[in-house]
Length: 337
Length: 281
Image 1 (cartoon, rainbow over the protein chains, first blue to last red):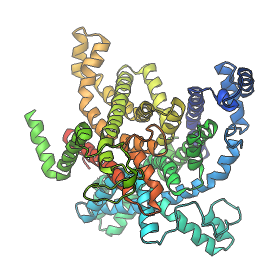
Image 2: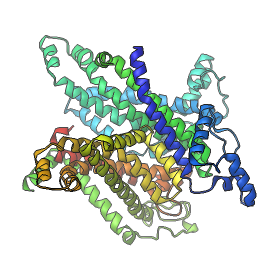
Image 3: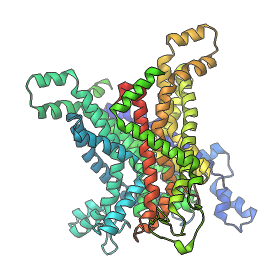
Image 4: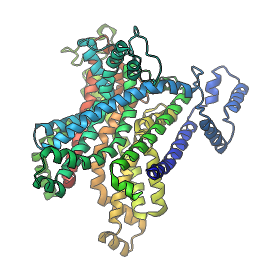
């Protein structure tokens, strides 16, 4: 087990190195002069040069890269130009909001996609199979920001059953005390049901919009892989031996069909983390995506760079986790390693 | 050609939705080419007397906060949205197919470099990387094209590499080599044309994603700038009016965007069915 974990950790190292190099390169491609921007419009050339030296922009690229690595190792992602706040703390305080949204969306997507995919494969060619095809094709075609807006219009403006699309909690409710940073969990832990209900209502629409967008690859893969497994010899043998259809589908077929689905989760996370930015913009969700978008508008580069790096590191970590889970579920991988 | 047509007819009869997708595609092409000529109003002409009017016979899709005709804007935007998507897909194809074929055919260090590059790009959540690239290169339409091409590059490179790798030992490649063709000629004249059908499917499959990605970037304010008509930025403008009930500003460009992506996704699936029956799902 430990060996499996270690061998997976080693494969993540090149990815992390690549990610750091690319995010470093992204800042150096910046066409404007950050020093001039920092100094303001009326700054003298001397003041600009001073700031350039302070930011370390007068050194050679390799030297700057070493300085960048040093900063990263001490957890320093620079400071925002517009607010002056360190980027690392801002991202850390906003991360739970994004994580809560993304995880709820993921749970929703998995909870809908896998039963749908299994049913579509078991009842191939029936209406549920067609439903699955429509949902998967429509799901990836719906721009997530558009679905979010439609939901906000229908459920907030027309039906008035959803709260205004403005953040994690109604202004009249106070956030729960900070234990995990997840409002749903914290409000339950402190027994504050009113806050829990309020947070859930705020979370529902953005999470559903994201889930619809990301469930397509999961449902598609579940269906395809279930079909392949259901057609194989060992399922025929199981059926011929008179096992109950339920046992054949769940204990025999699904257990084998779930492996490619776990691999697809990597792509689903890529979708979710990207959709996160758009959904947070639509629902004014105070997460890291909205933080990055606001920084983009004011050409404030350090937060954007910090955001890209954080997302990429998270994504590499998630892929690592997926790989590890795959190893746990599939004994063959464990034996190989 | 004849068997291919017959096969295409068979696929269409099996799956009439693909036929629908081809029809939609034709419609989008017409809108893209003739959009500016067909538009009933000037898409940039504001008219404060007509601001925020719901759909009517004069303005089919209503008017926006500046009184501009939304139908004309949606129609005219087709060209920009499709051009961005086409350009980025072609760029991704050129970069990805060439380096992928080289990697699959030559192997060795070429393969390692291309593979490492693709892996590094895939280590990012793709939309996030595209945001970073546009932010770094500058807020221009051409940079949306470049960013979208870069995030699609690994898909092309991987498919091209796998397909070229299968063919490097094939008889017709050996024959081409034996008859005295240089390596470059073998790769470009024999391997590449042979994997073109698969690459075409890949292109139509990624078109939808390219449109979504470009519109998403302009939705958060990257690339296309107002007052230019583009679906993503029009949805972003309409977002400000959703809470006060002016739904038509965001709905129509959003619906056009959705329909375009839907069309290309169906088209990609249909093309794949025609070219590779084994992968049919």
